[in-house]
Length: 621
Image (tube, rainbow, N blue to C red; front, side, top):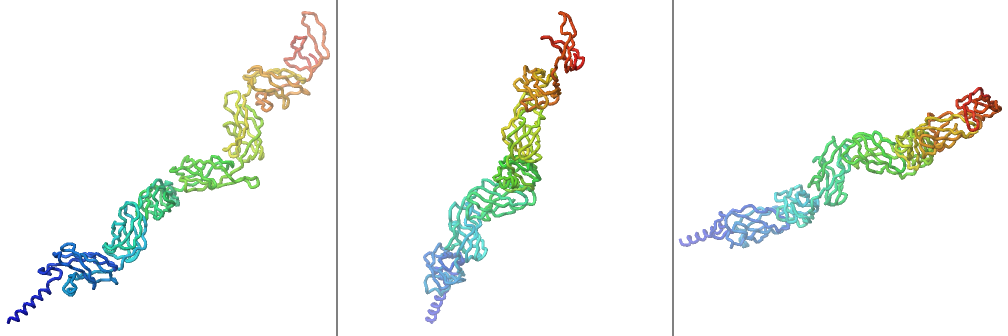
């Protein structure tokens, strides 16, 4: 009876021992301990993952515990009365294993334990990242390429020491957003479980946000194609840049250097002013400036169509849709220079010098004409501009003429062209010219409004009516003497008749002359500003000629100031009677000879006394 009772007690003791948890000190009930899920529940095959086991209930810290991963035992570490940490050992294969929380006494492995699932995976590796840099403000989306990435809620990237949640794209790609940091280089690594990060890492460069200084041009054509230059700083060589128009349309930008980007504007449907943002690596974007899309300009005409080879011709270009948003630019045969926007339909340009040689055999040189309102987009005129060799006048005759104009002058020189715009310029007055040949033209002097007695002006010529040569020729305008009377208007063919002229104004400093007919001249002696005289020259026979006043043999004033002078044959006396008369008496004396003319001024002279004569016939007075 005793033995039965003893045996029964021993059986009950072993039953109690078998049903007490090895996790708990003796006297603690097993059902008072509840194990929660592991954290993390997976790790790399390389091991080393610190796995946290949490339980409901209290452990006594004197209890020594461990973990068994499959068949591998590792020691556990108390964190608190309800937390234990174990470091996962390496594994030769991937996949799920059972992790047991046990006493570290080997003899109790087979005893009642808690078992939880733990998964081994291949360690994540990184081969590259893109982009390799981003701004210190953070926010750059970085694509990490490599192998072994898992679609888990713990997928994490780390930039240096700063974590960032990862977005699973595939087993070979993860996307992360760079957190804010200071400028400099950091390592980027990836963890599938948020704890074990890849050993191999890529470098990511934090840089200052690019600064924008200017965007030029500020407008372009609806047809697109405008090259836009963005200047600033911090444009990194490894970054990818884009220009975003109106937050809708993006185009790739070309990095020229640390301070310069270039974008090509897209085509646009209508005229509009839109913002341009610069995007870095498809992520960071910031405002660069505004850009206006405008209607394409059209050139309809320009004038003049030609100019001298030394340049400087002012060319007026006419057309439509010339935009005043920027400075006008002109281009002659590829040579670019600044123009002036007059209106939306007219631009003024000055032609540059031509370096091409102009020969008489090959003719003038022509170049294309283009305009631009933004210095980038150029539009061509339908007609070409022609360069000619500079014309030059070297001789002018006569060199003096009336202030009233109307004097025909002849000019000789070189490179005159037979154009409708061939011109002469007298001072500031321009008149058309008549073309004779390559070296000879003529012009009619314009009227001068100068109120003095004379004026000297420069004379120049132009083939296009705009560009005049720099010849040193001068022309003298003089005021015509307004002649009131001339006496006498006849005289002997032997000459030496004193002809007195009266006028409203004679210039006492001017060397005038009298001309009798077409060729015979005599000096006009000015005795006052209202009177002058000249002595008639000797002629061969009786004649009636025009008497005119001229200047230095080159100028003879208008016909309104010309008079008819009669050269008379020599008068001879054949007989006179009576040949004696009483003193103090009036006696008629008949004179025979001739030829006598029935002029009021016919006189007889006795000694030094002259008396009027009565004409009877050409042979008798």
